[in-house]
Amino acid sequence: MAATERDAPAQSATADREIVISRVINAPRELVFEAFTKVRHLSRWSGPEGFTTTTRAFEFRVGGEWVFVMHGPDGTDYQEWISWTEIVPPERIEMLHGESRGDPNAFESVLTFAADGAATRIEMRAVFPTKELRDEAVEKYHAIEGGQQTLSNLAAYVTEIIQKGVED
Image 1 (cartoon, rainbow, N blue to C red):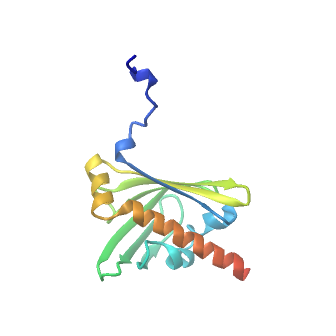
Image 2: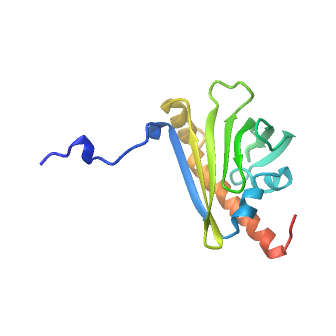
Image 3: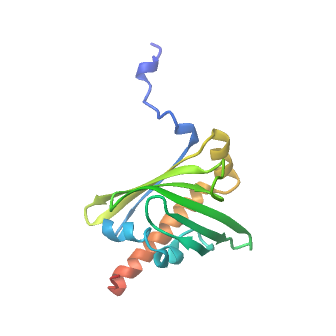
């Protein structure tokens, strides 16, 4: 018997334009959320392995911007711009991410933070304007591996905070 369309699993209308990365981090949700809200935290962990970040402007609020440069291990600089569109502490952060304000290729990103016992399940969902831009991010810029490495760096950073007993 042939499968019908209604038997097929539901797929989001943006699935071919999305990248979704998640990880459980052994830290309280409030701490994991805070690591995204202050530049002193972001500069310590944000980005894939071997990358560093120089912040030019940072204002964490709806409508605020984070303007920064990611420095690749090969010496390549990547101009980055984020504008926050929704902030629901400590549950969700929504943003627009591109190379600069007005970037026609900017993508929407949603970070969700869910308590998982004493840990936090974080999900990063990026939706690109086109499938081609999503594919370029995956193939040329290794966005999936970079996102996984970034969450690994975040996990190590918040673990270090917990071990030191530092509270900000």
